Image (cartoon, rainbow, N blue to C red; front, side, top):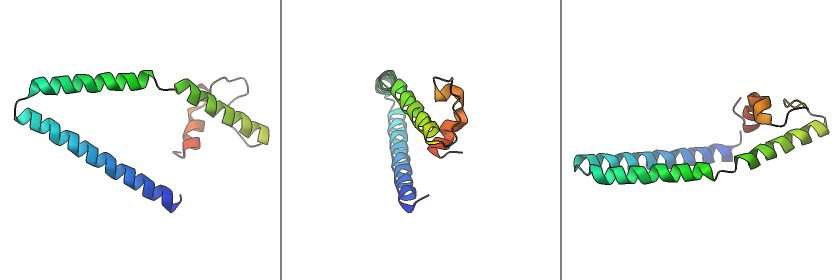
Length: 104
């Protein structure tokens, strides 16, 4: 793995850790000063935003892109884990997706 990718991941991990600590401090402060009504409103809005993000996520487009990549790998003669009769690489073999992302 290149040094640039490692540095980028470390930066993202640091930013995520700072965000988590900030949210934890805000929730702790609201609980300390007994502002549970405000905490309830904020958490309700956060769940609504999360549901909207999931609702508008282009999961089908991502699936199509992965399938096109598997088809191009097959056409190039490289080994692909997606069977020819499969319409979805996610349903065909989850290990192929992990390998593609560099997890396994």
